[in-house]
Every structure is written in C-alpha cells, then in structure tokens.
Amino acid sequence: WEQGRRMVTIIDPHIKRDDNYYIHKEATASSVYIKDSSGKKDYDGWCWPGSSSYLDFTNERVRNWWADQFSYDRYKGSTPSLFTWNDMNEPSVFNGPEVSMQKDLLNLNGEEHREWHNLYGMLFHRATGEGQIKRSVDENTRPFVLSRAFFAGSQKYGAIWTGDNGAEWSHLEVASPMLLSLNVGALSFVGADVGGFFGNPDAELMTRWMQAGAYQPFFRGHAHHDAKRREPWMFGEETMHRLRNAAMARYALLPFWYTVFHEAGVTGMPVMRMMWMHYPNTAELFATDDQYLIGSDLLVKPVTAAGVTETTVSFPTADIWYDVDTLEMIPTEGADDGIAAITVPSDIDKIPVYQRGGSVLTRKLRLRRSARLMIGDPYTLFIALNKAGQAGGTLYMDDEETFAHERKDEFAEAQFSANLGGDGTITNKVTVGAGWTENVAELLDQRTIERIVIMGISRPPTKISVGDSDVEFIFNESSKVLVIRKPEVSALSDWDMIVTMG
Image (tube, rainbow, N blue to C red):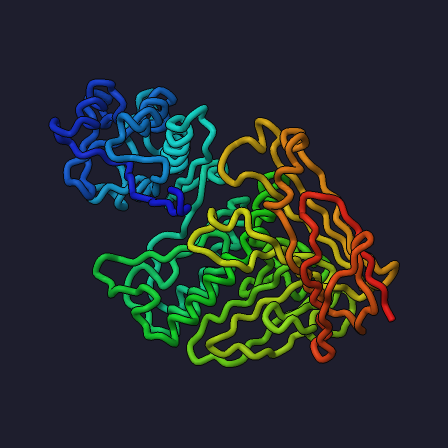
C-alpha cells in the first residue's frame, strides 16, 4: 500500500452452485438469483466454475446484498489495495443461446431477460463499485472497477475495455476507431488490451501497441493463459528500452491525463476526441479515425502496420503544432479550415505525437514505481506558443484518492497563461476550493514547478524574473526552445513571471 501499488482481480457474475461455498449458500437463502422461465427455480447455467447461478443485478436489494459482500470482514483476504475487474458480465453462459442467457428467463420482478440483457453488465459494474465504496472508512475511498460489458451510464462506475482481441496488426489498427466510438458515446475511460489477448505479438507489434496504448485513456496489458510470456524483458534489451520509454511517456503525462479526465467528469467532453470535435469546419477531418486528440491539445497518430518508417499526419492548419519529442515546430501552412498532410519520420522508436500551439501541458519528469509515489513531485510546464506568441492551459489538483474534492471542496485548479508576443509575461491564477483554502500554504511545497519549457520562441530573452528575483534560463537557437530552470513557484499560488526580450 505504501508503495502505491494496487492489485486488480477478476470477479464474475456467475456463482458456483456448491452448498459448501458460502456465497452460493447465502445467495440461495436470500433469494437473489435470476429464475428460470417458470419463475420457480434458480437458473442453472454453465460457466467457468461449471454449474452456476447468476445474481439478479436488476434488483436494488440484490445490488445492496452484493455490495455488502465486499466488506473486509466478509471478503476473505481482501485489503484496501485490492480492486476488481468484472468479466463475463454480458452475461456469458457457455451452454446458452449466443453464449448468453435464454431470453425468457425471469428476474425477481418477473421481467424477461430480453428486456434487461443490455443493462445487466452495467448494473453488475455499479454494484461492485458501490461495494468498494461501502467497505472503506466513511465510504471515502474511490473505487476502481474494470468491466467488459457496458451500457449508457457505465462511465459513472468505472473503466471499460474492448474485450478479447488478438495479437494482430489489424486489431491494433481497429483499436483507435473502436475507442473513439466509445468516447463519442461519453464512455471515456476505455482501452484495448496492449499486445492482443489471443496469440503472441512479436517485438515490433508489441512496441507499436505499447506506444499506442500509452496515448489511450485506459492502458493495460492482458493475455490468454496459453500465450507466451510478454513482460518487457522477454523481447530483448533493445525492445525493453522502447517499451519502457512508452510507459515513461504515459507516467510523465499523468497530471495532464488527470486534468482531462476531470474535464470529462465535469463537462462530459470525452478524453479521446475525434478530430472534428475541435475542427468542425474542416470537412477533410470528418471521417478521420486513425488519428485523434487527447483533450484539445495532443494530436496522436499511432503506427499500426509493420515495417513503417514514415507516417502521413493530417495537421489542422488553424493551429501550429510541435513534436513532443524534439519540441520543434512542424512547418504547416494553409487556411484556418484546412489541413496539411505531412509525412513525418516514425521508425520503431517514434510514435507521432504533437502538442497544439496555444496550449500549456503539465508533466512530472521524476518517474517512480507508481503514480502514488509521484504525487508530491514537482511539475514541468510545456508551453507551446501559437502564432501570436500566446498559450494557456489548466492543471486540476486534488488528493487523487478520496471524495474530498466533491464533499469538502478540497481541490485547486491552476490556470497558466503565457503572452510572449505581447507584454512578455507568464502567469498563474489559481482557484482554490473552500476545503483547501485554510491549509493551502502547507500544500505549496507539494505542488512546486521546477521547470518551464517554452516552444516556438523566436529569440532569447535578456532577463526573466519573478518578483525581485532573476530566474536562470537556457535558449536553444536551432530548436527555438527556451528552458526556465528553478523558477521557485508553485502551481497552488498566483504568480507573474516577467520575460524581458532583447
């Protein structure tokens, strides 16, 4: 727990019909199972344990009963670091029609399965999440529940993945369109199994899938038990470094991901966005589903074929774009409603990812063994200037674990802005929730900014200062990148930085 590591184990909706199994015994006595078509007997289907019955999650009493099973004194061996993955919850029945339940089975209210089939997985997901909340002190720890089945509203209860894919290039290629479709439907916390579930990815496919997965909302590896081992070190040292770099890019961007997820939770805007969402006047982008935006500010074009060394990216010319690795501007020209189709290098070490000019992204570059261990680490701001030399961006902050941000207003939101084409300032204006107002001074050192990287600045400044103190900086003439070091400011306080140009 102290290391921030968490375990996620599978719990399915089918219960083994064994009177020596306490869950089945209590479920039978409590009459919480789906009935057969007569409504008189508990349904008996076949799944992983063999003969199984299925809980009726359409019933509130049953959902409450299930949630109670997650209390630490009932769920043997469970701890606060144990979370859940709901699988087989369509529901899957091996000996049923279309590998599911007969349509005329009855729930406890006498309604046929055909009426609530699509709701079942979501309601199981919901009850499991409610159980994780109920088990915690003051019901104040956020749950994590991953689900295979879902419905409209599942985004309220947890993450979704796209099911049992294969270790094939075509399955990597189709992952982005699938995830974009789900995001358009407001299901943002979604992902595809990295490397494919069935089969054995080679080093190239595994590398490309890790690179793509690192820029998709839910990021995990998963494989069938008959597949070969695929830990990063199994592919040789060279590939291991590439896989590590992909994971490192993901972890560095966690403050940005957290902010975009917060936006999704508050506004409903998806995390992973079709290009047309931000460029509705650019008709050439309407059908584009092989590249996408994370939030409004990162453009991602995964490589989804073998042997690729170059990729053509459609850059909206309404904005300018910067390569996130080189930090250099991509030369694009055109009308505000057009695109520039540019072929960019994309060998095995490179996934094309670009930051939009006019944005400010936040990263943490001191990578550790878990996100939890990074919570007090300093931020680095990446400022990508637009054509006017301006940029803006938001950083959302809370304790990343409890519901205090909702119940006690314990949160803050930093609003960064840069105007280097005008008055030569970089500023931060912070909105602090009422719950953090009194102790914000104690939190300043946990939210420091150690570095500011500015892309697209035409010439070096002569001086940079915060208050009465000068700040150290380095300017790269060839890349047009300015790095401000140790500004000694916090994301939790208002400040103005003056950039004096020569």
